[in-house]
Image (cartoon, rainbow, N blue to C red; front, side, top):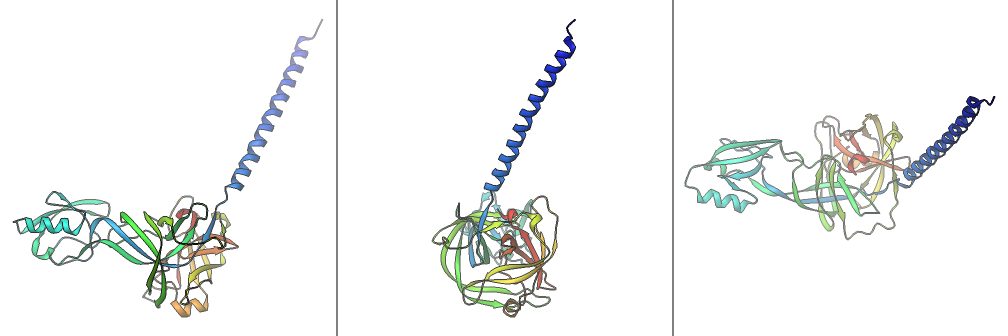
Length: 324
């Protein structure tokens, strides 16, 4: 009598073997494809280190000082006065002088909160408002494929206003750096002469500004691969920063601590300036160095973002991918 069970089992095992072989082939091909895709998707950036002047037009008027008897605080964004939308100082002046009352109803944004305030005209006259920003920072990178740039390494803030909405902004190169050195208890600053326009932006993120470059040739600049966070090591690294001779040079730093961040967050690394030439010029980290690119083992790993006031030789850096 024929053994049907045996024949069935043989056929089933053969079919099972064929299916397993096909699945193994399919899986290995997908692994190879994923590896190839990851390899081909490596990002390369040009770390810059130029000190730039950042100029921006804000979406709203912003309060720049505080006056006794007026409830407005530095950083308040003016949304409405007497129910009228305020976008410029002229808007505010029109409402101020057309009202017969000695007090005005003002709607503001303070941090993440919307508040309705009453302000008397007399102290309001002494409040400084504007809808523009200007300051110095450092250009972190340019993406040679897209011409996109990133700078600053943290959001642009004024008073209690975090990540100020920016309508339109520009970055320009600088010359003739004038550096007020940092010392314990005081963070110094960079001043410079504005040179020429090299980019526009309208994005102010938690990790800096982003925009598109113009009028700048970076075809001969060295490209650095973007490091993964697990490639960053404690110990020696370098920053790239414009010096008083208007050259971008490398300075030695040490990475003291690395945070295990799995999602975007500030202060990824704790760093220390150890380069004697830089310490002689700056005393440590100064205002205007925010955005200075950090490189290690031939890769770009981040940017300087903060200084410690009680020890300006020490500060923090943000991981480069959080800026992209």
